[in-house]
Length: 279
Image (cartoon, rainbow, N blue to C red):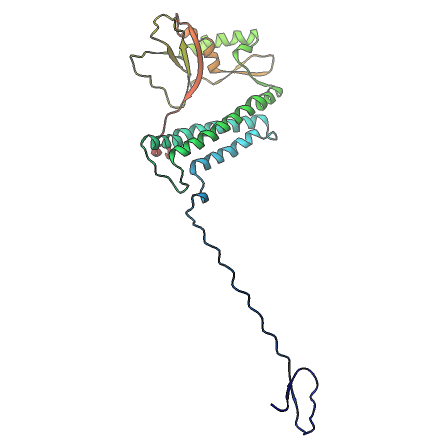
């Protein structure tokens, strides 16, 4: 159209006398980029996104163990954390592992969101628990007890007692321990005796040449009415021996005429049903 131009500059009157309209520069068109590819939505039911319940519990107990392994924590507090770790494992095996064992014996192959079968869970639990117990004992024997010893608190076996402490232990056994013991000889013709849950017991094995060779084993329940730590005199130091060690030292008095081949302490943990565990 005559008289219309674009671009900057003043309005110039043409010779014909009509005004020329100058329009501002038009912006260039923006090139729109192509849309980005939409990421594929992952399957939220993928077993890799889930942590097994039993292994998660063991991870929690491992954090308790870490407190017992921390050298910055006082030695007596570390001993308490190691004891809590062990007590937690007892309950874990009575309830959680017992439930998995029942599933395994019942041929239950149903898995949870983590897709781990009962057999796979038991295998993973075994690996973690063996590692956890090994770390606990390394800390207890190699660090915690030596630190307590340097602080004036000792835990000794009956084989390392002074003559004064040894005489005290012998008198303590005869006066306090022996009257409350109930030794049991295991006869193959009778059912295994009932032992209280979470009780500490001594397993005794007789020599094959012992009179009445059909008796090879015996059990001595450690009485819960007595303190497990027995303090013995030791020149002003706080020295203790374990009650089961005291009983094991004199276990031959409980089975007269039966030569003893060995004696070992252990606890008995029975399975608990889920209904009982929630009470």
